[in-house]
Length: 349
Image 1 (tube, rainbow, N blue to C red):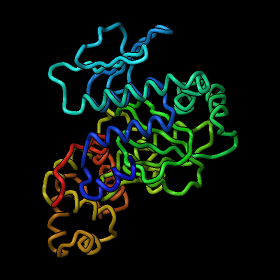
Image 2: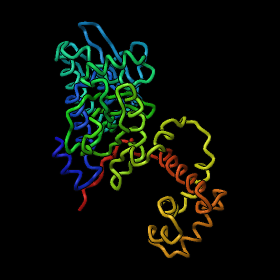
Image 3: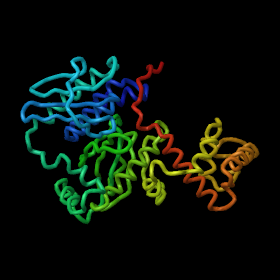
Image 4: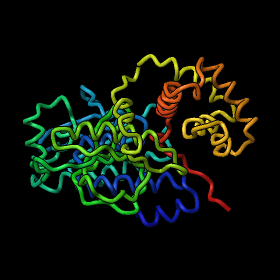
């Protein structure tokens, strides 16, 4: 399936949402993710709550598109549910079914049957990675969970973060699961610190960390993922940004960011993003002009406009460039669309 999806993506990177749904659940089954992870994937893909119930033992679970549990029973809607082997799954869709609801239900049903047909072999390990990556879990419990996953004390690893619809050219053998985040469910894998770059996209790779601090690696991996901009930038390594990635990971979602607000005014210009990117990466106006592909006098005019809007000159001193660089990264996070489910597109001629 991944090979087929890769060929289709070569023709149209947005091709066949249905195939991406299938590939998504393929990866989740390979990763042996738990029931909540499977429901989170279905809810995220469908854009509505997903749930399941079973007869023996009696159990029910409902999950939102952001991976949060929903309390209370619900009657499975007849047109948006399937039942097999004493297990019922459903989508809590309001209004008419969407185009891919049927394929999402089909793959969710298959994945849940596989999940519950494996017996108790991995019961103790199903939530282990989620515990390891949760800073709110006591350190002793995180270490115990890490040991169950084969992550030995004293070793260093990196967390790789990917959306559920990521395209994998090669899937590493690694501890993995779907982990709820403020941005929706994320497919997380833990690889050795010196593991070669993972051939997939879009993905973010976190900083190297010991077992006690893998939650930090995960947070930086999510930031790196949100900095991706396929097809030009399908993957980002947190190490590229050094300590800045940690600052961004610690930034509250509702933080007051006046420099970012001002930069947003610059970015509405057609020349804004390319010019700001050039200013951040260049050491002079002429270097920035070469990067932006314009005459230096044109770049100088744009720089004057940027400085007037921001209230400081990026080339005036080191602090100005630092402010612009941080504001630029924060703006990219604020406007990131990498976690939006790709829409199907027309095949290219």
